[in-house]
Image (cartoon, rainbow, N blue to C red):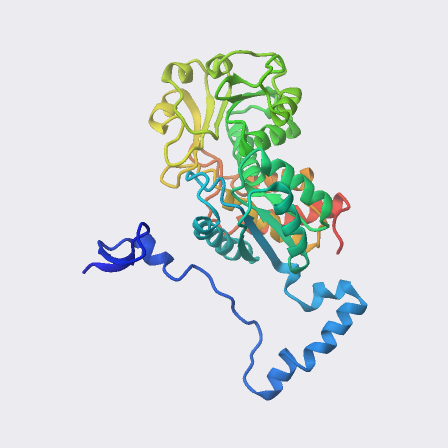
Length: 399
């Protein structure tokens, strides 16, 4: 029997074949739920007036009590402007809401963290920063989501400077943490160290830049970042400020030209850009290479081709082994940061998250298992504990 759904191209309803995605999303995917009962007059007088006035007055006298008597310490704002949503691009704030709701339920499911979707009707950097700063008193952390580059870099940087709560752009750092974890295990599996590897990153957007930074921080031998015009190198005169920064800390080999030139003899390919890499370029990589082709739904190098030349293959898809999925990182990272009331998320906390994630399957390594499943119940507790410990070690924890 056909199900009545709303046609996304029309204001009317229409009969269409049953669609499981529409059925699941009807009415949204989340709701607010009370944690205390309001059954009678006594409950009401405690939950609301007059009892609530005592708590408000106490917080007014000692603002730190907000962490004990409100939801703030376990709630994250998931903030977007809808300009870089999944593989859909700039679709606007309303159309981004299903993704933000999805992010929120993943926070709860995998990290025990409450999250609130906030889609902003502006793409102006100043307005986004000002809005989030004004909203911040209600939240323990801010997860920036699906904001296009290069604006996402400035927005994150400014919010980190203005707020004393964790601000984390997951498209950048979640992807980077999971990529590093998988790369660590692939290296162990094949008897190499990160310092022996040369990587090529296809994509100089949010994820590509963050991956390059964390790989350098982790001690990789060398990494070259490529955009549509080829290798991001200091000799190019068309670089943006961000790409100029990237050129300054990558490509120690001084490679120039198209991405194919960088791939010759490379040990690692990391794709976060889409498009297709020609098979001859893949064949030119070093023996026993690692190929992490993470574009969705079509990897830059299809696994059937990648397996011809690589020792380890990973994608962003759930229907192939070794899925590089941000859900392995962000719930535990925020849970750990909130647990110790961290003022920010440091590079050390991200590295700790990657190491903990890699360690979950350290005794189970194989070519098809260099990263845990998102449903592995060991993941979130391991990442949470590692991030909390790193926050304390780096002096950004407040409890």
